[in-house]
Length: 322
Ligand code: UDP
Ligand code: MG
Image (tube, helix red, strand yellow):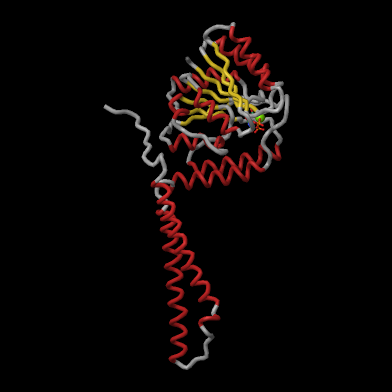
């Protein structure tokens, strides 16, 4: 099978028939064999009925086109939907797109070509001209992408674009989890799939329904970015982080205590008036630093113990063996 198209959706009943019709037309024109996998993320509207109908109507269709559906019992989020879609996908090239008709299926043939012929592992869409709210979406998104570029080192303009294409091997070897769908290129890069490209794609206004993500996605997005950065750098050796910071703090605290004590001794031996060490604020700050340093060190040991028991501690992606 050439292409798997994964469509995560939450309450998009009105868009679905249009989207499917459009996908089917483009696929037919380009003679692709394909499957569309609708992942219904616990919709409370009639989305699942619509998918059932599309699936039923397609049974009489050609064997080169399959409609599949996965229905969650409740709303788990876009990452969960993508995770299950990736697990189910069978096509050589896997395409993800939003269900709200904001992404155009017309882009699929070129995305497919970039994966197959240009040898990209992953191609991300870039909504160069966006049709979303300027203040709440476009502007924060620019800032967000600039940060993401710095932290991840991947030069993408639109990391969180819903329209992306992957080589099958990529989606089978990364694990989207929590709200990490925003950083799939980073996950791919960390797994060793480094040929990541970008294609300017058409974007359209949302015709039906409403956006599912509010402003809090930027707060969450930044926190998730920090988590990923940390996991990538120290995930396998947390002691390198906690041990270093802990030792530094302990050391500074230790020197400071010695300085405070020496100053007191100096004052005593020269008969100068000096305050009690116990009421000297510097003394308390120094002791606090030493205690915090020890705690961080301990946190490092605990983290190492946890990693030791992680089932994936020795999972390596082997590219080739001869
Ligand atoms: N979506 C989902 N689960 C959720 C929220 C959203 O599957 O909990 C889907 C949604 O139906 C759409 C895609 O994710 O197909 C992108 O969502 P949306 O269009 O609301 O995001 P925006 O374009 O506003 O950033
Ligand atoms: Mg949208």
